[in-house]
Image (cartoon, rainbow, N blue to C red):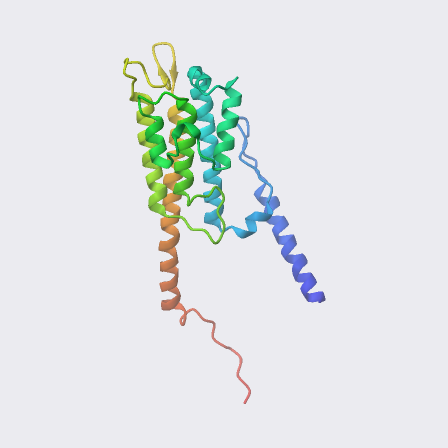
Length: 250
């Protein structure tokens, strides 16, 4: 028992030291600070890839909420179509529907890319910002296996995550270029003129696209490295073993 206790204390001390070292930095923080998260119990059930996918999904949803806020600010007529009293009220309703994975009524049970297509159709007359935000979030969640948090028992398909990035590129183009039947922009997004250059919408889309592309690479690399590691183990297993240096008594 004393040996086990000492070993447990040693492991705890090592973990504490590693966490303290991870938080030490002399880098300047004048333009913001890197995320510093407390360890959660659920992380013990996540691999490195699971954790990365979970953080990627959380960041993607946050980017979508930022886009929704920007779209509502430039297009206040949209939240009024939904019968809401304020932009904040509309955003709260959309967030709740996304996080509880509840259908959005105006999309008439259309989900994923079908919902995105419907929300971005020129003839769509309901709150386009809410419908587009919800459908895009549903598409991303679908690409991540229908989950916003992944554990050891869950896997990811690299191609579906990669495809999600291409869907975001298409959606970005549609938001920027599609017009209504009267020739007016479907939604006001980026602003470029002689006195202003606002590309904040483009940047948020770029962040989501980059995260998903990196996540697709990581998932592909995970399985590739597993195969390489297995072959290396077969080839070098017998060679990379220590040999006894003490004579065996007979």
